[in-house]
Image 1: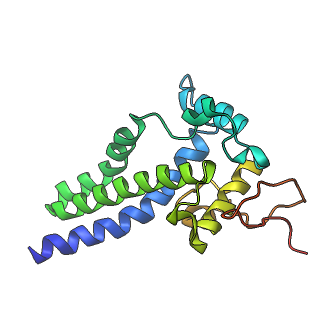
Image 2: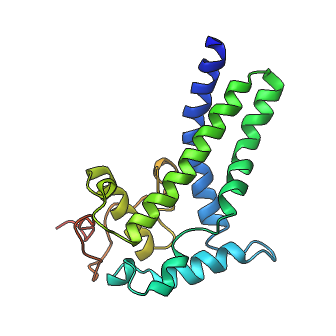
Image 3: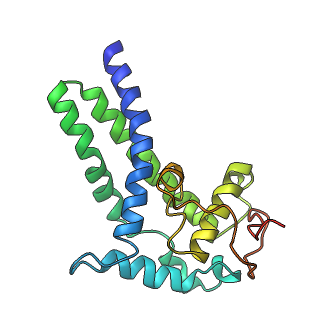
Length: 191
């Protein structure tokens, strides 16, 4: 039983790191460009979401009818979790360490749920408890810059992949009229 929990913990830790790279890859290569004839994710995200939510005052929801463009479609979560857990399941099958797959599943599920929740809070702020800590402000600024520079800051939850793959930007390159609010940091160029 201790071995099972050990592998579950390893699966969780690796799953969270892997999820950062999975999110980055999905965001950059599927949500920001059409993939052959598959245009759904590109259309829903790059065309619709980024058209509604920019880095200015429109970063926050202004029109109730646009609320549905904040989260992914309901069926995306289960599909993405299953896809993300496949490597963990294969390794578990080959090693007969099923705790590793469980850990990967828990990590991917948590990562996806956290992604949807904080992304919702970023675009529809309500002074929730989660919006108050400094880590949320930093992630919110990170995401705001993605809405300013669509080919930077692809991670929403954990910007490990942005950092390691060279797409991390911490401040704007030029001054712009950015969104304001208690949980939105100043991302203007450093002076």
